[in-house]
Amino acid sequence: MAADPRGGDHRPAFHGWRIVAVFAVTQTVGYGCLYYAFAVLLHPIAADLHTSATAVTGAITAALLASAAAAVPVGRWLDRHGGRALMTTGTVAGAGLLVACSQVHAVWQLYAVFVGLGVAMAMALYEPATAVIVSWFDPARRAKALLAMIVVAGFASTIFMPLTGQLEHRHGWRTTLLVLAAVYAAVAVPLHGLVIRRPPTGPVAAPSATRAQRRTLVRVAVRDGRFWCLAVAFVAHGAAMSAMTVHLVGFLVHEGHPATFAATVAGLLGVLSVTGRLVLTAAQRRFRLHRVVALVFTVQAAAALSLPIAGATRLGAVIAVTGFGIGFGVSSLAIPGLLADRYGTTAYASIAGALATPVTLAKAGAPLAAAALYTTTGSYTPVLLTIGTSSIVAVVGILTRATSAPPHASDVRDIAGATAAHSTDLTAPSTGGRQHRPSGQRADTEP
Image (cartoon, rainbow, N blue to C red; front, side, top):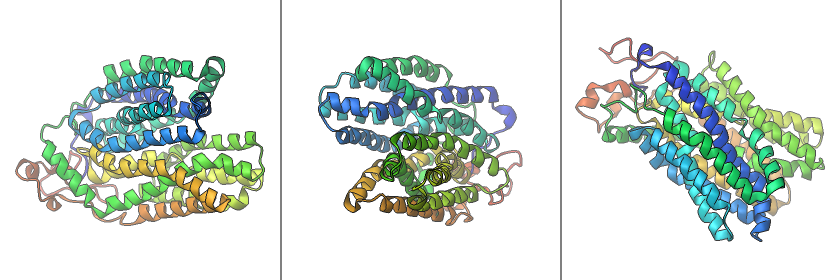
């Protein structure tokens, strides 16, 4: 089930790259305002509301759960209508909810606002932006387009965490949220509303792709064993990433390192995520994508398993964190590449949404599970060993059935008539990068 037919001369590439440039800006600002800012404001909010940091952390978890619940309907909307209205609405809602958050005076109000923020993030942040880019670019240019957006957005924490800290120090957390809301609305709302468009050809605009056909494509994908192997891989990897993000500083401090050193080393993860994405993009030009991803996950597993010993020294801690961090942002490029290459782009957003739901749930629950494990054992060693084991599970999931034949048109039982005649979305790329074409299919189309 490969991508829709698209000729390079028929797609106005300039506007596609304009959308990429817009997303590079809006995703940076969006993640900075809607996500990373709250890591800085967590304790000021808890103090002002006379509650614990754990309670505020629970609100952030509620946002992630709401985002997971919204992933599937958001994906369906994107496949049917494109991203312009959805992402613009999500941006407006996100800015408004930041304003609402600045006015909360009770914990229940905070949770209500954060549930809304979770839905807004599902509508305006990475997943819908990825789906829009996938619809605009063919496989030869898709990885570069995604990389261009992700590399810039990878610096969101680097920019907005210090900025949020300065604003909070000078004006307090409530005014800080008002400033962030104004910045987000002023930057992202007009850019999303004016620049995002449906591609003139391709899955979003394809008149032959009906709602029933897209539902069938999703059913075929979720019945494919390879889909569930990928789900296991990225759920395990997402859980490992989330747990390490939250508990790395605590582990290093527990090992006797100064808090400033621990925070600095943990800050390497953001920079290394960009490095890992660049390495992945360069390596996949010569090697199969799943093999490169499996190698990166293996390095992460080794780094996590060695950290209980290596983390005792500064040099060992830096080396181990570097090894783990190199794969920190790999999934953001691997998921679109693996899904679009195997299942095509007509129902990409719906299929990606089906995968995003369990991955997001894992990211939300893993830090809490890791904290419970630490509390029970009194040591970070079991936590790190579990993170390393999860990375090994991710390796197994990536490699399992990686060379199996993708679903073919003959496997789709519910599509008849026009769909059988227009089977461009139901043919499979071969494992060698070239694509199988059914008899009679034109050679100048992408199956």
